[in-house]
Amino acid sequence: MSAAITIKKIPAVLALLAIPMLASCSVGGESSPSPNSLPLVQMDAQQLETRLTEFGNGLPKAKVFDDRALRSSIPVAQEWMENMEVNPSKCGVTFAAPITEQLKNSTMGAIEYQHGYLTVALFNDEETLKEQWKAKLEENAGCSRYTVKSGNESRAYHLAKQPIDSPAEMSESYVVTSSNGSSTEQQLIVRSATSNVLIGLQEPTSKDSAAEQLTAATETIHALLEQLN
Image (cartoon, rainbow, N blue to C red; front, side, top):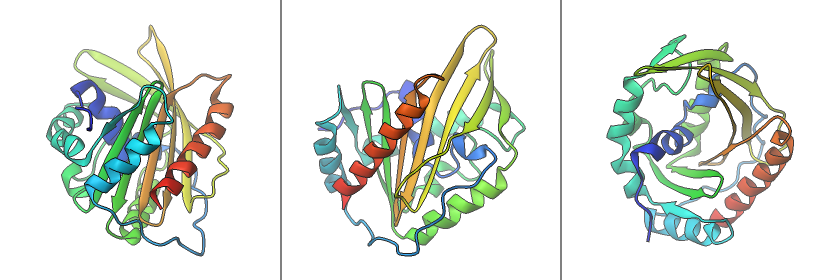
C-alpha cells in the first residue's frame, strides 16, 4: 500500500524526478556515458511499487509513493513552481515545459525515509532521458548562485558540485546551500541515469558529513538499480 503525498513533500519529490531539477543548474559536466548501455528496465507502476516496497524494507521509516500518488500531485507542484520568482530566471527548480509533459512517457515512484528521499523514473526509451539530461546541463550552465522568492520569503542558493565515483552511465552530485538571512540549510543531491532509469537522492547534509554521505548515497542508488533489474 503506497503512502499519500502531502503538499509539503511535493517540491522535493517531483524536483528529483524531473529532468531540469535544482541541481542541474551548476557549472560542470556529468560523468561520461558508458559505451555499453544496460537493457531497458520495463515494468508497470504496480511492479515498480512492489520493487520499491521491497527496497524500502531496508531503510528506516520508509514510505513508498506510487505513480498515481506522484502524478496526482503534479498540478499542485506546477502551480507552486510557477508562483516562484527566480533570479536568474533560468536557474533553480524551474521547468521549461509543464511537468506532465516531461514525465508523460515515464513510470514514477519514490521512497521517503527517515533522512531523505529516493526517486525513480522509468522512461520508455533511454535516448529521451539522455538527450534531456545533456540539453539541460548546457542550458543551465552558469547557475551556481541564484535566489528564489516565494511569497514573503526569499532564499539565496549556492550549488557546489561534488566529485562522484559511480558505475552509472551519467551521474551528478551537489551540495545545495540555501539561506534566508537568518537560517542556513544544506542538502545533498545525487542523480544517476543508466539506460532508461533515472534515480535521485536527496538528504540533509553538512560540511563535515557530505563526503561520507555521498559515498553511501552512491552505494544506495547502485543497490536500487540492481533491485530494479
